[in-house]
Image (cartoon, rainbow, N blue to C red; front, side):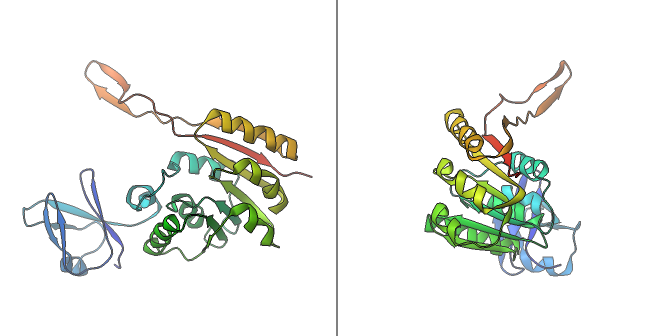
Length: 247
């Protein structure tokens, strides 16, 4: 067993990157040296006697344990892009608007034999993403700091998927069309309807086919003696617009 690993107790999760020193939690102190003699599924106790289960770190933990800067795209929305685009494990993906790197990390994880090129214009966000990629052990991500619209001109290869989570997404749509392979997909994420409509119209104008905009809603349920109902009010994350380049 090598780090990183996840320690879990109830809803509390801690990411461990090394097996030395102490991990201080509100449930007590864990002596990390003890992890060297254990395996996944075992548990370790704090000095207060609280057990933490030892779990492998994988894609399910990207959203929960990555360090965040801007608001990341939710896993349910990333999953929809992966499913709707039919992502293959040897794809070439362009991700504009790295942010904390959550989306790029999911793309890279499910694209083990391919490559993800991710672009972020804000260096402070790029540094956070770089550390998240390193922590996750993802080696098939090429990170670039700069303007995605300008950087798009420098690629000679054609991409299978272009994903946009950026302010200048409308201006990037024609560039994305040029960058994509025939039958490649463009997916754009937006929190507001007005910008989503503008992207949709630009994609149709540019020549994308099968263009659609949609929202995915996740509703958690609570079960009580009197009946079942949503646990909390439904909250909005964002809208996804997708289209395909077909000659």
